[in-house]
Image (cartoon, rainbow, N blue to C red; front, top):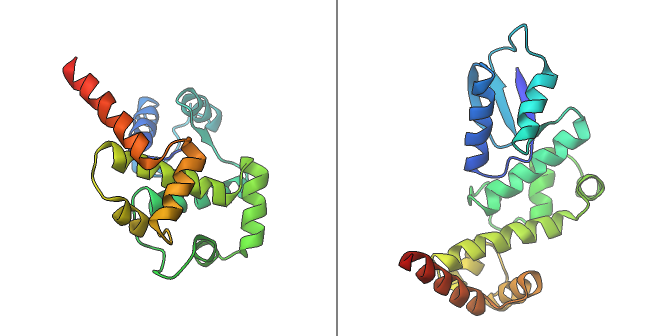
Length: 188
């Protein structure tokens, strides 16, 4: 039985969902972003029981086909941006990538996403990218040029401008503050 699950965005989410479902005594076959496969739902349990446990952890079951499609879009984008899965072709933009992976026209996907999520696919993707840049800046892993290249920005300037628009800081300011914060935590 496949359970479609809303709000799974990282490996910790997968672990949390796994633990939540195991507390119900479910036999898990696999847990991935956006879904969990279980052997079967034991007789005394209902999907409402599963829903309640998931909701307590900030997740939810997805029953609606349209919501399931939006969750699939989010998982594809998270995998591409956060985990750099590389399923997107080198010259392919995100809209073409989503069309190819999901088999729907982007205008339909975009409208559905905006309606159900209250933001555009573009803004969601930008937010994912900026979170990845913040992670890299915090741990001083890459140069801005490397970040821009890995996240398919046309230039370092474009990345910096978008970063400033979203966070209100330049990447350099953010990096400096993150470095100070890490030093403070290290001294505790």
